[in-house]
Length: 450
Ligand SMILES: Cc1cc2nc3c(=O)[nH]c(=O)nc-3n(C[C@H](O)[C@H](O)[C@H](O)COP(=O)(O)OP(=O)(O)OC[C@H]3O[C@@H](n4cnc5c(N)ncnc54)[C@H](O)[C@@H]3O)c2cc1C
Image 1: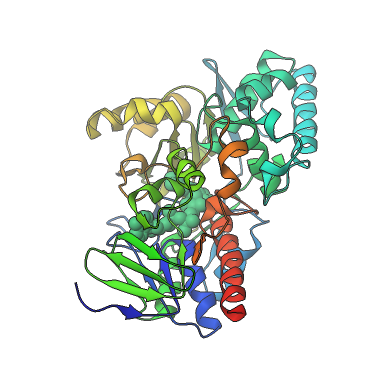
Image 2: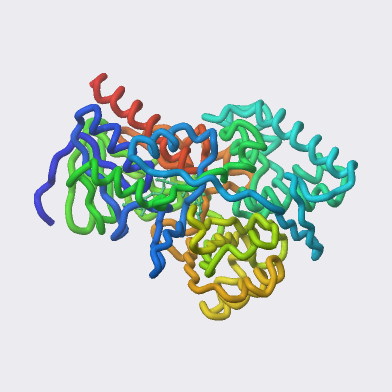
């Protein structure tokens, strides 16, 4: 192994959190290096281009009107936002029945609508009791962390149709089954987003050039300070300094910022070992299963049938579809999300059979023309060695109240970032940027104190 190189700060991970942390450190004239395990930048952001020039996002894509940091970056790096196509009817497929509606809610009886509205009010009210930077300190933490989201919505909602509808929307937003996630985790996400309506409607825009173009432009502005194919394997530290080892090189620094999803922390060996609570948290921090699939068609044929391209379904495998056609309409692009148990069922099939299953579901939703995409792209995020799922970590019952207290607490010179540590828009790109803002402030404060 070559001699140790020296910088002020080592950043582990070149996802959005790592790169925006680097951007901020550069502005403050600190020296740094970003060490990335993959052979590409972006982490959970990854775009590709079809043979006829259509850009598709295989990972994170959408941005909401409240994502002020993301909107700022998009402007700073000269990218174009496309409003998500919403003209026409949305399809809701629940319990074998298909409904189309022009409004935000499927056609339901006034009793069911009142039930859902009451649930939203109640959930917003409870979420306001949860501090978004430290949910474990809430007086409701223990109680809410004992029940799943499934139990929470069942206690609040009085109608069966209300429960089915809430489950449909929440499972898509969390990318997990409601029985897998603690109610405290869900309410924390709502608090971090501002309200349940914000959380359920964060898909208003996407980046015309693809989200990865943002990553590439940030990295171009950083210069030669990012190292790909450098999985961090070992971190040795004391109160004064830290040495970070990859298989090939080692770096000595005053501080290290770790931005990996918390589940992957278990792949790094720390010397001395991290506090037990921090390790146990990582061991309980798996990401839900998710497959993102994109079908490119000759044209957006669903628009001609008066459909917006948005469809929610509780049937396997397709959970959500959204129109992501280029602005000039030269091709039709349907983005498809398959999460939770649907993803686990379908990922065992060979690619061809998987695509057949998806096309069958699309035909059910949009008609025969959906069977004939001219191209299909797919990424199974659970199979990605350096992510292992998506959209982001959700904790099962008992974890946040017992273990998450250590989520953002620095350990000596080691500081934590990444969307999972965000207090605003946790799980989203916006959360990744907010976490880097917080961690850079923290690190600079510590260094200037020394
Ligand atoms: C399918 C999917 C769809 C999504 N859709 C949206 C969306 O529409 N809108 C939205 O806002 N968000 C969305 N998200 C969530 C969004 O992608 C994340 O919130 C955000 O990108 C997380 O950024 P991050 O930097 O915190 O983590 P990551 O992007 O995971 O970056 C962490 C980096 O650390 C690297 N790494 C891991 N271990 C090591 C190691 N030992 N050494 C060195 N490097 C290491 C990883 O390779 C990775 O590059 C989606 C996610 C997925 C998977």
